[in-house]
Figure (cartoon, rainbow, N blue to C red):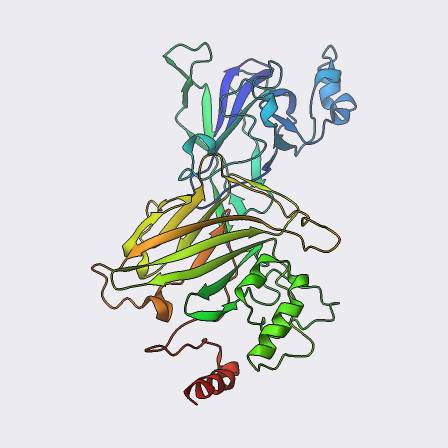
Length: 437
């Protein structure tokens, strides 16, 4: 919302409020930009700040000629297209820069399904106008709005639409609301949730299969100059290999393949190259229900505050019961999605750190883990082990993760196999025959 709080002939005070209405999206380090259409400029702000403080255009332009007595050393930005960034948390109660409700979130907008109070960001600014618009009732909102963030989906914003004046809390603290002079609404819609190159990936494993189906080769992109294979399928791994970085898994993968009489490709497949990976492990499957264990690994150098994830289970979602070490609930408005985030005090996913002995121990990822329980009651035809117990989509911080193309599934009775694509059917058949012999 673009609300004009007060208006004078030559300037007005406005408030910009950014509200996140998407239950599965977030913005981190948001950057908001627009175009001034009538040579306006920003003189002062509270709750946010221009990414560049630049008044040269005013001093040497029309603004400087008209406002000859104005001290432009105190102005903030005269760019035709300014970019606004949020203030850090420690400026929330700053008398000069803060004290705006919902300000100073360090650029983070969480989904309302996680915390409604943290899904809003706001700031105020003093805007000076130029002739011939020197009339307190002549107000022109900026155009061509754009908002984006780091590791965030893309958004496309529509034009400002004049709406009924907003009712805002009275700044004096009285219980009565104040009405804005004028209000415009700008709607920004997400253009896509799955980026061209994913930022996260998923591995699958199960209690009845000794092999882990890892994240796909180059799931988050690959450097073409690599000596590894960008097309070879990712190697099946022992479960302990998930706890170490990719570069430390080679010996484990080689030994695992040797123990199972598997031939390794040459060259070996490239890494997934994802900063975040999620393992979905089918933990148990019994007559009345089943459980899964979800583990999130942070392999990057940046920690995630207020992280969240979402899992789509097309058939098994009806039986969702409980999440034990995360906050977990059915996503409002969806019949197949679990929304997950950290418990109070445990909502910080730390970055990768050095091992106990950095000279010989591999680096250690930041991790969060929880068991999720389900019932089978009143769900006809549910076959957890055959695939119904694995998600069809997984999201981390609003972005869709890359899923492996195969599942660790079981056939009837005690026989165990792994479902591969058709190109690896021969391998499955050989393993199955070896078991029968």
